[in-house]
Image (cartoon, rainbow, N blue to C red; front, side):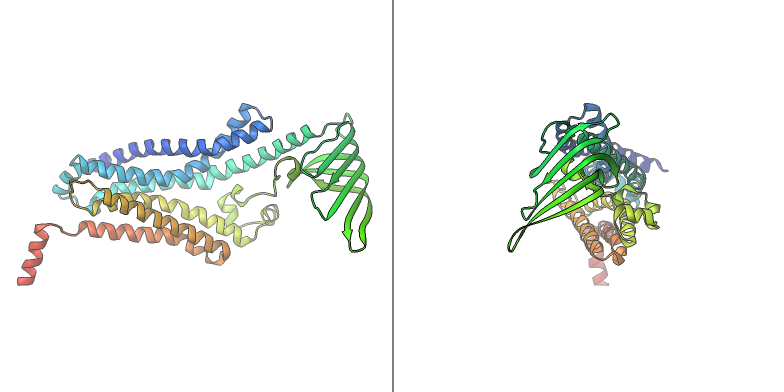
Length: 380
């Protein structure tokens, strides 16, 4: 690699590290505050809070890196221009297309980092986070299951357990569920067990009865059902919503491209939804080179000005927002019709065309020399 490329690339990487550190810190702290309050309110230790915040870090980094790449390329280009280094490079015969090469290498480097995150670290972290959330939900549930006292784990729900056996069986259990104003349901059972299921903690009632009181036209209607075994989902009641199955984002990209029956059953998704998620991951790293090139190319189209390059910076930010808006619109459209997944690659293609157009404008002759050449051509 030529020395000039190594110099520009070194400047961009230094600035990228600074902007990435600042943006990740701000974004991560913003997300960690809410998680910190929720976990501490559930009685978790500081180590659990640290583990959960660390597991959210790969997702935060994957979102922030393209923005940091844009900020580094725009600030770096402005810095090279302000210190007259860019003018010296152009006077030496290096045009915008030639100067864009180290910026493109920098953008590809950031894109590879994003690809490693979205295809590897983020799914692993999300899967681990889902498992730990399920374990904590069970622990929180166990804290509520205290014998010999009426408990109110949720609005409209009353729970009573006479005793808990040494092997973990709940003896003589009573649950009154009045969350539905039109129906009041009462569950009684001689024994019950707390088991872990795909959707979270489940209470298995043994040898009991369900009494359902509903409002009818001629007065209340009471229906009684006796059972030998009955499952009652308590994940949503005790853990603030519970875990409603796995998320597609918990699985690897290759498995999403060819989803099997186990994955579809665990997530409740269709094969089209799984492939859409995979193509979103493949398209996401492509925006990193585009963001870096926009920050460079937009600042190259303006000539020298005593007022700085704030106008070009505004154009660069506007172009980046437009590409991101197009990316969000494409994701929303594909979300409604998964057969349109090629639209997910359209924002990167539009961004590449936009960068090429900006570099073409920057490479056009400007100033008296260009006007003189135009006048000479007209006279001829």
